[in-house]
Image 1 (cartoon, helix red, strand yellow):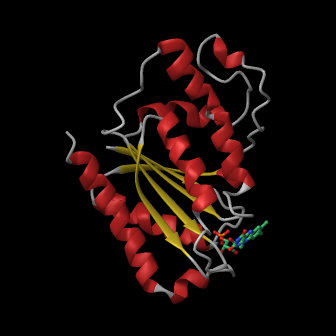
Image 2 (image 1 turned 60 degrees about the horizontal axis):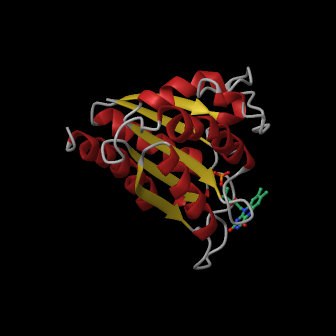
Image 3 (image 1 turned 30 degrees about the vertical axis):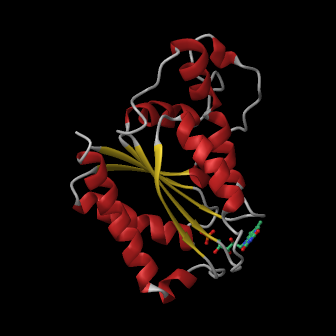
Length: 195
Ligand SMILES: Cc1cc2nc3c(=O)[nH]c(=O)nc-3n(C[C@H](O)[C@H](O)[C@H](O)COP(=O)(O)O)c2cc1C
């Protein structure tokens, strides 16, 4: 089973990265083949809204997004991690999400069919914010729900942690790291359960 793990924080050893690393370990323990992608290491342009993708369903901008495109179509699970920046996802994450408009175009305008069924492709979203307000994750979760839907994926679970600010703050909360590890394992079990 192929799972894609996408790190959306500009901080390499930041809180969401540490959580996603645990989820990756959990998924690997459950037998998944995990491909890890660190967005900050890639050269990905924002969507230019030129709709070159209308021809083939593939984005025409020649950059590192092309490396992710096929994996997005074939993976059974996606684990995406982003910090909260101004009540939504980070810029790295949003730029990546916007480039997936080409997949939306493929699905709705070209193939007029999905890539799988929403039930057999599942997504895990991991997020962290510094403050503790009730609405902290609302903006990000709204975007993420529609994003996963465009990829024909169910937002299976969101793991959200409040009150973490400095890089490595999450290490003070082993319960969050355990939860991420379990989420990785359980995501695989949930996908296998659909077979
Ligand atoms: C540009 C920027 C915007 C931020 N906006 C918010 C915010 O709206 N709400 C919040 O609680 N924390 C905010 N934070 C704090 C981060 O969410 C927090 O430091 C988090 O732990 C970073 O996760 P990371 O280590 O995975 O990058 C912001 C941080 C930055 C750098």
